[in-house]
Image 1 (cartoon, rainbow, N blue to C red):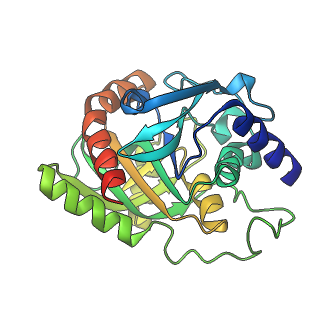
Image 2 (image 1 turned 90 degrees about the vertical axis):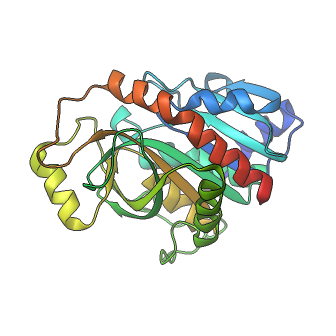
Image 3 (image 1 turned 180 degrees about the vertical axis):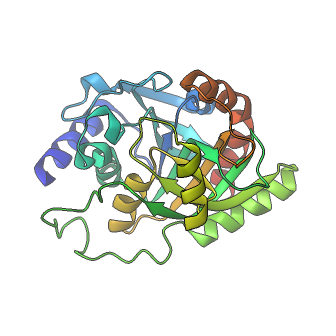
Length: 269
């Protein structure tokens, strides 16, 4: 895998001039942030060696390099999921490549179902911990050049970056929730009892992504900031039928607030 990572990174470097400091992964319906990126250099996933291709509506499948908030960034407009049939190594491959492109920080976003009774549809939740119910992407032979065999996960999400986001939320008068994200395989949305189980475990929101990417980033010692947009509710007594179209629609409505937070974070970092 190491040779494929290097091959892919070398290809991207040969086709672009931006050398990114920060990586950004955009979730379902949240690709609009790229409109704020200046000096854009764009590659389609289908043109990048060894890259999977997004198969999910709301994931455009483009790698965009440029400048956002005064920082050089590489943004994934669309991610890969285990439920698409990819292996965990394929799902997380772009994070490995981003490291070889030079990033020192990773920003991740997603659309998720809220299980905390205090949450409302459209809220932004800063992820401060996670519970993984998917296969761990580090299963298999360890590549020592990427990270140690047993990586520490006592701080999967950077306390420093969470504090910065909270300060910016106060400054911009944007309401921010905090909580634990439960990562599931999907592609089904949760049953009422599954919502209840995950909430009992300590989860505040649930979704089908993010956790594998974070694990791989932390394996490589990359600090992570992650934010969820609450697109539906899994709270007992408030559960309603939900569709992928609903998730995209609500995500798009709250995306502008998320973009403001991320852009200002980059500016102040």
